[in-house]
Length: 139
Image 1 (cartoon, rainbow, N blue to C red):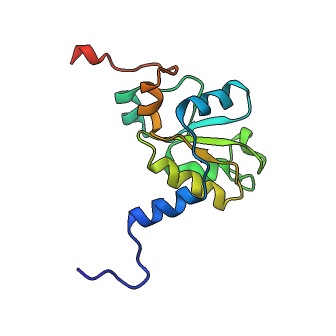
Image 2 (spheres, rainbow, N blue to C red; image 1 turned 120 degrees about the vertical axis):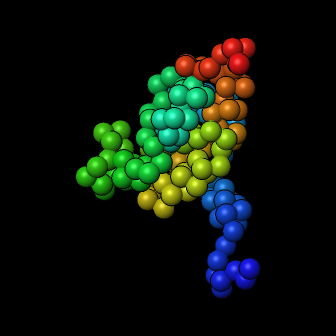
């Protein structure tokens, strides 16, 4: 199959997105949250959150509405999203979709946005606070 002129692979798009971010390991993200310097936004769909668990106090904003909820110029923005200097840390399951989402926030002017390397799975593996995590021993 011949790729159309100008087409990029998802690996190309992801690499470009990540070049724009200063990504965080889970404990660094947690430290920023503890200091009150950031907001953690979980973009996973409900079914994934039910299956994997959640981070307490994370804002739940599914990926399909993220830009509308965080664009300071949007009439549909969240109350917390009224400023361009907001530090948004995006969380997905493994840290792929969150990189693309954080780059999209950069496009809106929220250039302090980033994501968590390894996503929720890395957060949980680091022993950071979670709730609703399925009991692995019950399987």
